[in-house]
Amino acid sequence: MVSFKPAPTLLSFILSILVPFYQELSSREWQKQTDERLEAQSLLLQNQAKQLESLSRLVEKALIQEAKRNEQRFVVLDRITTIRRDPKHGAPVEGKLFPREVVKPISEQGQWIQIEYYHWLLQSYQTGWALKKYFKRVPASFNDVSTQTSQ
Image 1 (cartoon, one colour):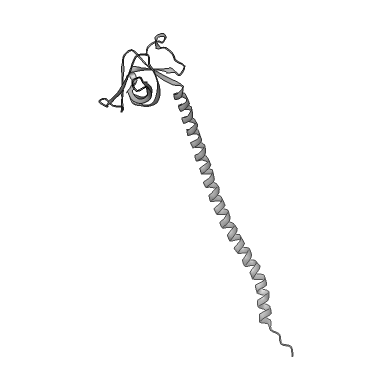
Image 2: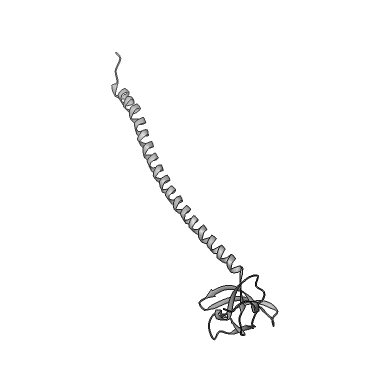
């Protein structure tokens, strides 16, 4: 007598249908999670690209301003000008500039300008602060203030 065992055969048949179905569901879930991660990464990269573009514009602007500053000079007007260590009245005096001396600007702070100048006693270039009102802004190719109009 041949015994018929439907349970293992039926179980095998059900598993052969359910396993691929389960694998398909798992694959879809994995694909959905992957797509969500990729979308998040894409948004992050877009934001970073915008930030880089903005920073590039700022750097370009700063470079242009620096180039313009390097092309400028200041010339001492009609009186001896005091050079100070810090941009404030009462700061220690570092040196003096005579009329028509040309100096290179480094930075500006309110009514003060930080300059690079030649210190005749030390025979070297120094930096210091002076009041802007005693100077006239001129191009780097400037030679003599006597042919220019005063500020």
